[in-house]
Image 1 (spheres, rainbow, N blue to C red):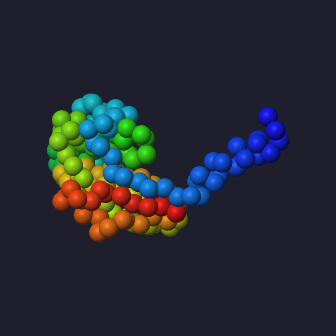
Image 2 (cartoon, one colour):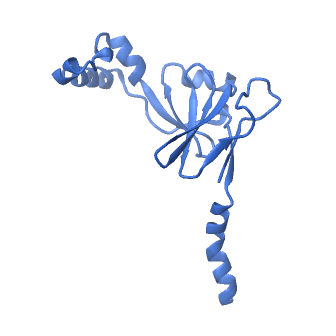
Image 3 (tube, helix red, strand yellow):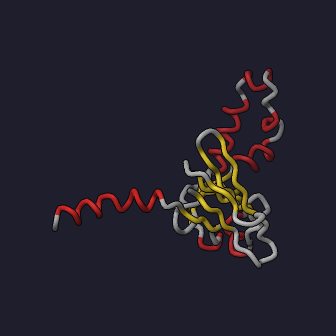
Length: 157
């Protein structure tokens, strides 16, 4: 292989990354569960450990500790990824897999915290797939995806 060709091949990934990217909200029906759901024994154990910390009571951080069912609702989640691995979500284990084929994107939003941009695709019912990047992103259109006329898309540079 010629030296010039090798240089072009080595610089190609950097050029592609600088060109930016378009992110479309993923199809949740194709999402894959990549983390395990906690078992009931694990949830009870973590509830007892989390809520027995006296510091929480004095810092007004005990809202989840008043009822095990409230704690379970928040903590009984598993990690999911879109089929391409670009978007991730933490979804409730009790009903996530059964609902995913039926949901459609409702809204796309972009927010920034420090140097990280968060692109969030909201499907309603507490289902939100997110993508985090250091690129600057913006929503194409108004971010409303319910009418079906426009796709949920964000551009990142």
